[in-house]
Image: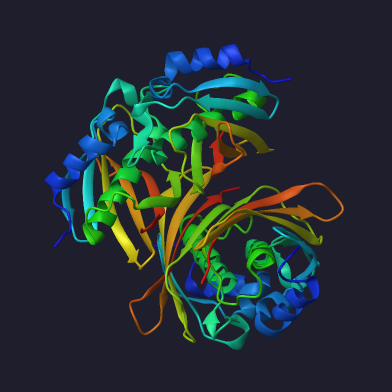
Length: 136
Length: 136
Length: 136
Length: 136
């Protein structure tokens, strides 16, 4: 069972991560070591031409990895990303974006996870992300 | 000489990259293959506890790389990041962040650059970023 | 169906990639967009203390991605890695290592894939790798 | 002053890293937080067509980062790479390759460094590498 509920995570987001709020990111489901988040399309997210911009995708991926780390260790606000790698695969054109995150490793000091970003309403993989988290 | 001026780049940012605008990112200087940008501290950028969040740093780095790519190829809006890797090195606590970007390679189809993110008013390296751009 | 057979790929390895040969790497199966390779344990691969070294793991991952790219585009020797990111997750102690590779995207100019490296005889994930290939 | 001398590092390489030996890698100079290594051209290193292969370049970069980490913390054999990212920029055709490594951060638990790989006898940047080391 996840060490943080969807409601607890979304409340943490609301209180403490204003960029996540500005982008409308919210968790839909969190299991132990997995999380699914959504970022609804909005003009704020765009770059030329009506495509969701890279920074919005990186923000979604980073928040999704935070969710998946907290699903394992509970609400520890000071867990921080130490490295993130993103490969952009396809354009996400005027659409909501789904993040499917999973934890690949949980060590005492480091956690590592992967995220697939998918264009909602299709199976198109928009980006693939891996990241390492430092655990306090 | 840069193929895009600071004013032209900042105008492009204003028109076409609302996330860059929301974060207050602007270019200070652009040479051929180099660029310096600044992101002023604001509450929107924070995560626990009063530290500039990773997504804000990734946004700044991505915009800085865009500047440095356009410094070489001119205003080509459809140049897009294909891969970005960021290592977070030190916390940036309630401070403006400077991006110093440089182009490492310019090919016909790919450009590659590096960015150092520095806490303003210190020499502290906050993050190191490398990224690849696909050129249309 | 794969555009290259296991035998063709192993023959290419033998003729053209002496480092792969020195490390004993060989493909076990190749499907369209997937490949499984093995690297048998040998003293050449070690680092302190009797652990398979990072360079050996990176070599295995790179060869596995080459296999999976050629499974889609056929024997094109000039396909080259443009970016590779590896996260080391657990030690591989004195054991064969399995690579399970899959293609995440095949574009006209770029292919992108992921590899999981697994300690043979366990389900332990030793490393997770993503890489981009430039297609000639 | 470096916490490990060139001779000590090359002796460690000879005793404990047979892949480094097989590739002829050796340190030329090590300062506190910097290191320069060389990998002489040899047929073992090639891929089609007479180009130094990616795995050889990754091996050189990883050994160079090991040198630069040990220059700061002394001979600690169990320091291990936790993440490595390499961007391949230009072909290295039948030439020795030089690695210029520098330490970007030394924390209690993590070190992070960058390496430029250069074709000997030119200023051509062959690859750019960043990596994180876990410190025991």
